[in-house]
Image (cartoon, rainbow, N blue to C red; front, side, top):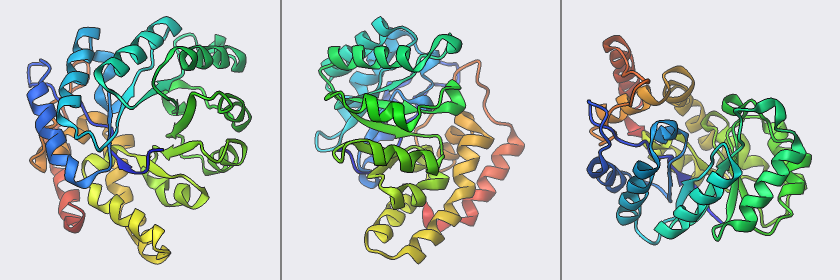
Length: 293
């Protein structure tokens, strides 16, 4: 079971768009003292823009850099069941600790609950790694219902969920219907405290690449029963969380990380780097929360 604060690490590219695995390893070394594990090839890793050979290079470089005492979760989702199984196999071969699988969504209208159940069970049957369901309806247009999650969680190799929906009512009901051993991680930073309050064991957060100490302090305060302190951190961290997800996305996340001296690199086309004006706004936001950085 994964706990604590886990960043979904961005994939560094050079300004010309070339993959930069040296910077990836430097970035992992910079983040490692402050986090409890890593998600590689998640949404913030710009996975749609990577070739399969590049995915392998990223995984090999990351595995080399991540200490064995900290987990490496690997984004393994694909549009076909066959490719998802292959990506999970590669993740295991490289030394990953779990495969995070997003719902196929290109043919969204055909992705009925039974179709998705068949897909996830086939992946879980074939994977030597534990499979985690990635629930991110704002990207896929598919929101996994609590009843569906309860059914899929009965599979012995479907062992957890990353829920990025921010829907606390849905998450609360999921936690009621899945086994006690099921590993529930929130992927929504602005609702981290509510998610912990209803039973989430940890978090995979884009903003944990920027303010990992803030989220670690929130988790520590929550575990100590100091809800006043935890709520204060939640409120003060939300503006940065929104900036690097909803407002500016991956380009904004990478821009903030570069401002902090982190080796995040640049976005790959078709994504564009943020403007000079946006960079100034992000820099001003950082100055408002110096104790978090």
